[in-house]
Picture 1: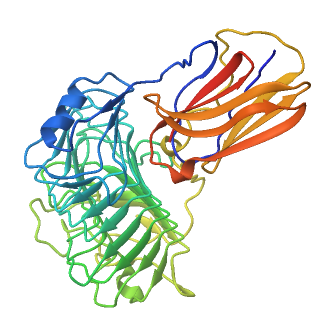
Picture 2 (picture 1 turned 120 degrees about the vertical axis):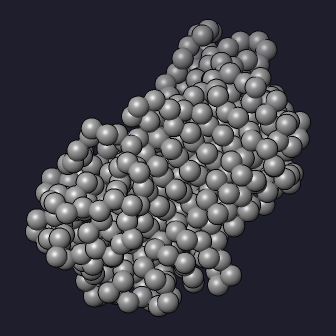
Length: 465
């Protein structure tokens, strides 16, 4: 009997693992083990994290819990996974999740609802220039009523995707504070913190000062998000210059393909006081074009300022900045220059497309499968006339079996800890082609193993969604 299996995925969820051929008892090769936290208390989750190895998943239960201390994460490449919005609910405190330096590279947090925290995730920088977490992914979470959800104090990379923000200040970014680096900087790279495919709402009762604020040579990308703002204290998407902080101003920002719905009373929307970047293909509704995009430098205009500037160029002022194809309805929106005696059109900024600019890969690679998995053969019992193939597409697994003669067939789906999730087939099948499917989208995020057997031979593959 010869079984061949191929897994190809275009699913936006992340899959990690290996494909296994085995005989006899059920077996599989694990990318990492699943550790079930005994409860949602902060101490129980910390105990689970302390016992984890790189690549492991910490599975949180469907509970509600209030956290007042700090959860410390020092292991690399962990997944902290809840049971989904409305099921795993954490009422956060101050710096509820503490990440030290680059020690938690590859961290993923998914399927959790966070409420009413301040600096819920704090990524502390270390070294010079300061470095913070790399390849962070926060996805499919609800973030409600948080003053600041994440604060970084060093250069951070990763992606926030498919989250729901309600009355929340998403991010305050302090970057590397690199004392040497000077513009122009490369754009369209992975060297930034990305915010994409999120839904952001602020109700009449909410009043967050920003959605994003950046300082200290930080770099961010805001793209393909949908905003619905009924109220805002200050500007929604912000980039500070060197004026307001000790050290560097913002380094880069890339803001594009966002849908931004507002009420006319919003003070400002995109307010850039320093740095370089691109703003394009954004659509605004319900707003005054004169306030949609504004640029300035508080070191020269519109102070107050901790450090003034009297020469050109000012440190980290608006530079190499390009704006194009931003609209309110059919009305083009160009930036309003509130420091026109100093920041000059066609010298420091341009109302045209940036030459040779290419956006970074979308969707972000961290949201995609790591690879197209191929068969990893451990053992094989040959028998001509049988072949098995499997594919994963948009949350559904399809298994196709071709048989030249009658044989017993069993196709089953298991959780990572061996619990049967679904039996797709368990009967004798005649010669011919047989197809089976499993809708993974109806199941919680997690690790699953699909095992298919024909006679005594079997093929198993592992999915992490």
